[in-house]
Amino acid sequence: MNVTIDASEFNTVEEFHELLKEKLSFPESYADTLDDLWDCLMNHCQMPLNLYWTDFEVSKTLIGEPIDEIVDLLNEAHDEIEDFIIEFQ
Image (tube, rainbow, N blue to C red; front, side, top):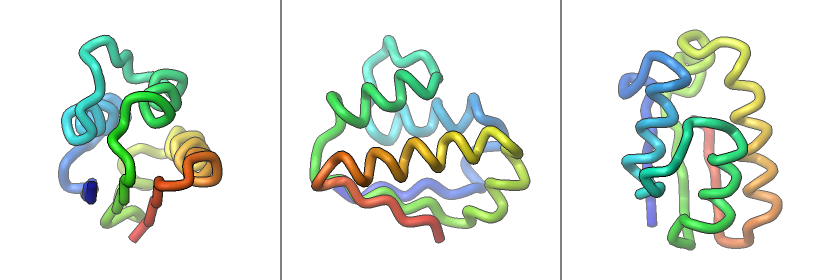
């Protein structure tokens, strides 16, 4: 599955999580936390998954510091999940 997330689709961390929930079909119980994001990537996502985050630099400006934790988590998931690719464009 190929999924693109663009900076124009959200303005806050909360909106980012909601967008991921929608695009990746996370369960309704998804609570917009890093722990839940990890759990959903590891256990609920259809693989293979290619996640493209476009206008990433704009996202950094919008979200600010919390983006570092999100990026770290996504990169760690990439290392752990054989069929998960993340690209920051």
